[in-house]
Amino acid sequence: MNKIDEMLSLYELSTEDSIVSQLPGSIHEDEIRKYCWLILRTYPDLKKEIWQVGIEGGDYIYSFGGNYIFISDDIWSFNLIAKKAVLEELTAEILSLKAKES
Image (cartoon, rainbow, N blue to C red; front, side):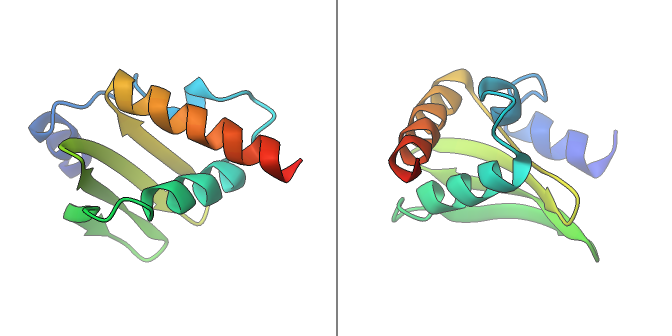
């Protein structure tokens, strides 16, 4: 098992539960990254739990409100993995922010 698999397993997260698959294909990963960080920074209890950093980016487990999320963020791509309820909440907030910008 590699480090990322260990991180996901430790927090009972699955790669099948990705924010990228929840959003319309018209929203590019750069936009998803922007909106996710805008939203996540509004949680006062956002805490970085564990991480693995490389030259191009890193993989992180964050917690907030009793929930855990896995973020893979590097110069080529972005992904956020979470339980379904968290994904639904974040997806709704992202779509709301995107609509306000349009």
